[in-house]
Image (spheres, rainbow, N blue to C red):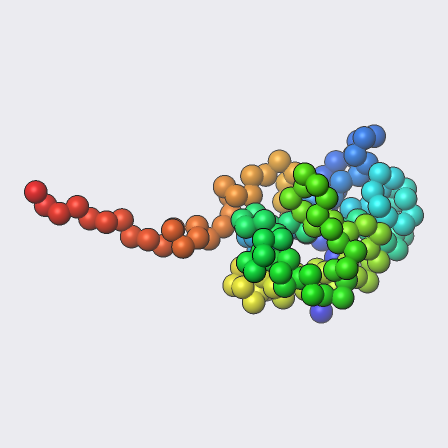
Length: 161
């Protein structure tokens, strides 16, 4: 069983407009999980608590770099959508993430565990120890990734003239 998801949460900032925002969790180089709770998020209670253990429900977002999370047959959502907790998730218009509102804390824990299992199975991480937080302004495509199949191609040598 993975460490409690709340133990990974690091506050990025607070504003009146966006409430308290926690950094995303990078579960490998493709899958990112965001757990949020404050007066502007879909959580219970709908307020900003100093003790995050006081929340019974959270707003959760799942996204991936490339391909988008819900790309049929290849995006992580193809696997994750079959999980018990996935039913309330939807991809809001103009967003790149699958978002779930008022997700029970026990489902949040299972989401993290299922994301870890997915990333380990796909070879994106070796273990839970490889999870890291992502700064809000971090360009994940440029700082992480395997390089894809094209990155493995060897340059063609030109014949001597």
